[in-house]
Image (tube, rainbow, N blue to C red; front, side):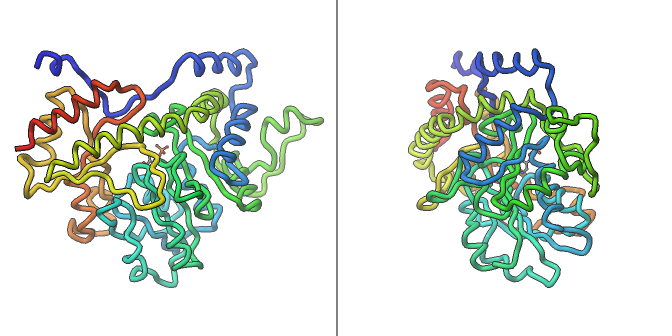
Length: 384
Ligand SMILES: *Cc1c(COP(=O)(O)O)cnc(C)c1O
């Protein structure tokens, strides 16, 4: 009892150390701290790991999603399909382009978009779809591309660095992939994002869009023969660049990605073995052949059978020093989306259930065996 009073397990904690500290000295000493050689190296390594031709670093995954839609030509009057249960950024990116997000309910067993509910929302205006690899489990993008070959597919892989389906990594499944390096994700650069594509033309567009629309990067210009000639500007771009400080940290973090996932996978399996014995808890389902990225470990509570409601459970665990969060939120239940589109809670019943009954429990690379055991024991003591 005494131990649980002092124990404090955060929901997530970045794993950084001496190597990140050391590499940061390099851009600081060289003086090149905006997008430069470390961002380029981070991009190269990320492209190799995710088996894509191009990786383009940006300031975060939200800006990645924005640029992905712009590069695909999404604009006013277009409709873009988005799952109803995802972080709000997925839908917001569609609004940034003045297009309309069209929500589709999720499959409650995977928390990802329900493929069988896509067809009935398709209209002549539907231009693209953003399947989300929620919590690190890939959405079935191959099936989506098969069924709707004319749709542009942007993967929201914010949680899915290193995840995949069979031999296909996240980020190589759609036309463009988007990733996040926010501290809640498995590898982090503080803030940060990455775009992936196999299409040379899209890569060139994304490269310009992130850098004010400039035809060449600052590094190329400054290190080229005529640094005094400003580049051409043929399109309206943005400043969505990643700094070289972040790029340097990214290079080190990316090298640890597979080890991080492996460790998370070990403890996720431990959680599932122990928690699946509790009848009112549903542990994460992983379809055959999928490699989970384990950004987070999310349970679903059957409130009809559980001794307490989800929010009471979160409070109970908080008292035990275990921090938890809802998996994520349902977009149609957020005030701004209700106001803009007039949604009712029951429009997307699975997203509503996930919104109200999901719980993410701690899973990260700075937890000890005792931490994991404490989480399991705290659930087991509730079993009756
Ligand atoms: C974290 C997250 C984002 C946003 O990523 P940022 O890098 O914070 O902009 C978008 N979509 C999903 C599904 C996320 O989990």
